[in-house]
Image 1 (tube, rainbow, N blue to C red):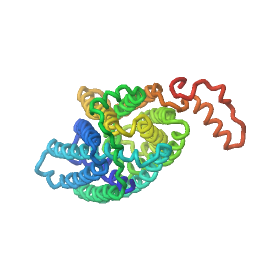
Image 2: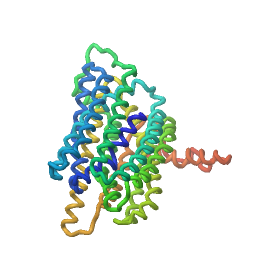
Image 3: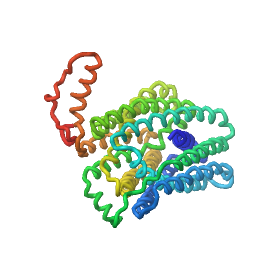
Image 4: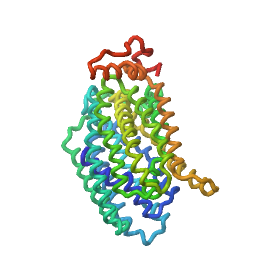
Length: 440
C-alpha cells in the first residue's frame, strides 16, 4: 500500500492534469482525457470470467499490476515526441496510453479485490480499509508536496520535468506490485459445476440492496463532472503553484487520515450505510466555497480551501470506507469477482462521460457569450453528491443502525460520556429501527 501510494501520488491528480495542460489541452480536451479511459472499465469482466473459470487471482493481480507502471514509462517519453505532434496529437497519444493503464488497472483491481476478501476477516475489514487509507494517505501526501516543490523548482525545463516525475513514480509502482508475490494465493472453493457467467449477473440484479448501493455510487460517480477541473482551475485560473496546491490537497488527505480509521470502527459497530450518508451530507456543502474564490485570487484560495478541504476530507474518508466495506458485505465469496466487475463497470460507466460534458458545457457557454468559468462544474458537483446521499437512504443493510438514531442518540451519548454527564436523548425517544431502512 505504501509503495502504491507513492506511485499514485507521482502519476495522478494535479500532475497528470498539469502535464496535459503543458501538452496543450483546453477544457474540452481535459474532459476528454478524463472521460475516454473509464469506458474501458468493461474489461473488469475479463478477470471476473477467468476467475470463475478457475484462474489464479494472484497471477492476474501480479501480471496486470506490472503492466500499469510500465505504461507510465511510455507516458514519460511523450515529451520527446511533442515537437513532432500538434496539441490534439499529443493528447491523443496520452489518452491512448492512459487507456492501456485503465485496462490493466481494471484487471488488477478486480482480481485483487476478490482476492483480498479472502485474506481479511469480515469482522476486521472496516478497520483494515481505514488503516490502508490512513497510511497510504500519509505517504501519498508527503510525496505529493515534495514532488510539487520539485516540479516548481525545475518547471523551466518544461515537459521534461514531468518525465523525471513519472519515471520516479513508475519505479515505485513496479515495486508495489512485486510485494504481491510472497502473499498466499487463496483459490476459490472447488465446485463440481460453476454457475454460468450471465446467471451470476442475473443474480446480482436480484440483489436489491447491492443494486441500490450501485445506483447511489453511480450518482456519486457522476460528480466527476468536476473531476479534472479542480486542478485545472487552481493551477491555470487561480495561478497556484504545484507546491501550494499540494499543500492544500494535503489538508484534505490529513482529514481523510483522521476520519478513515474512526469511520472503520464506526462501520464495524453501526454499519456502513449511516456512515456513508453522513459522509455525503458533510461533503456536499463544501462546493459552495468556490463562490468566494474567483479567477486570479490565489490568495483567497489559500485562506478558504484548507477549511473546506478538511471538511470534505472527513466526509470523503467516511464515504470511502463505508462504500468499500458494504460492497464486500453485500457480495458472496464464490462469485465476488463477477459481482465486483458488474458493480464496478456500472458505476464507472455512469461517471465516464461526465468530465467531457463538464468541459464541453463550460466551453460552449463561454463561446455563446456567457460569463462562466470552471466553477460551474463545481456547483453541479454539489447536486450529484447531495442526490447520492438521498438515494443512499434506500439502501438496506441488515443489522445497521438508522442514520437518525446514530446522530441523535449514539453520538450525543458518546460526547456526553467524554465529559462524564448523562445522555441528553434516551434511545427510546429516537424514531427509527436498526435495520437501516427508514427514518433518516
